[in-house]
Length: 570
Image 1 (spheres, helix red, strand yellow):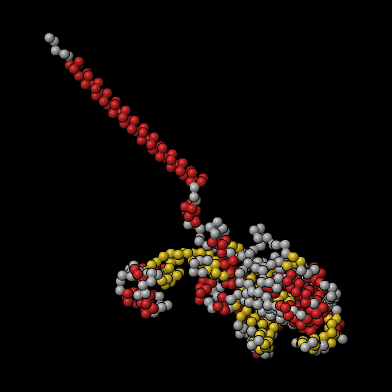
Image 2: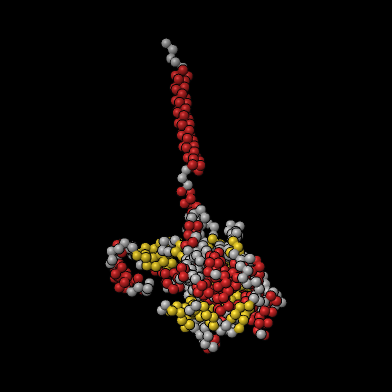
């Protein structure tokens, strides 16, 4: 029997190995395909999930990432874009007594050295109190944070928190206001626009105020100078665009630093311009004359009234600072600020029509403005008879805010249309409202020469600013003390408009209880104290507002000067 050949013995083994190799490759290929399919399915699910969330899902997380790039509270800027308020991250230092593990007395001693606002005993009492948390300092300096961190005490907490910064410190403090400990608006614009400043949807866009930082600084400086010179207990001022109602500057003194508002006194936090109400004296007389002109009762500024040295009405006697003792014209009544003349004109107007005019100017309600700090007018109420009508006619027996007065002058001299005051810049997003008519255009025009006369020849001469054609009225009102009026304490004010040939801006400045000085020869009336301050302020702010000095332009004085000269000659 023959033996098998080698080829016939090895061939089946080779074929078997090749088959195994193919089988292994097939399994691997199959597993790879399943893996790729699985991976593709997972990727597809992730993509689908992302697309679904983008289209229909909760956007809270996405908003959170976006909000991390937006300050927690919106900025406030002035009309020129200068930053007035912003949010920044600051270091805060806190004590957690329950987590203190080191020497308590040594910690108290170290804290007293680093933060001497409190002594060792106070810090030790806090550490031993068992309370969970005490804020020790907000807006801590980097050096202080580093020193506290170096103590190595777990009971000391350091954290970065959002805080409100007012880079101009006290500038326009009562307009801006401030925030509370929780970061919400507590006063001023911060409070008025709290929702908009806090809303993630709008806080990325700053609030643009009507305030001009340049005009504001000038007003504050001159008013503070006058307040200091005459030892007044307070002051207030307003500058307004008479055609839009925009408040370009507004201040109340004493002021405060909103960065540390809690350190300010209640007197400093009080906004005299919008919340304080005062009897503002003879600054009301232009309204009385304007009412009579509108009603046809005063047909000419040369119309004559009997102006004795004393005017008796029932049990009431009205006096003048500069008595005529003769017949006087409407022009002279305004020039010399005659209470007797204004009282007679007010009686012609009557109580009902006087109230209607004042209501139409917004005087009988809290002043209209976005701020929440708004004072309520004090009026004669149910006792508004003839006597009250006379006294209101020359600015007594009614108490309003300085902003009320500025709005009234804007109404009388802008053509007779009332526009509410606003602290927001007038633009496409905040247009001028329609307003409503109070005085006729003719009355508005005739009033220009009357108030220019007061500054040129009357009680307001010291308020004149050469070249800027100021027209306005002084006001000196006695204050109540112990339920009675006393001449020892007064509120002095000047309300005016410039340039009077083409009125654009109204300004009111007020001093609360100014004292007489040797420079004023013992007088403490408006002509001597607030008048010069008004002149200086107009001279500073008029160029900022685009008003050029011109010694050859003026209101049409031919309408009033003949009546003044003729009556004085007789």
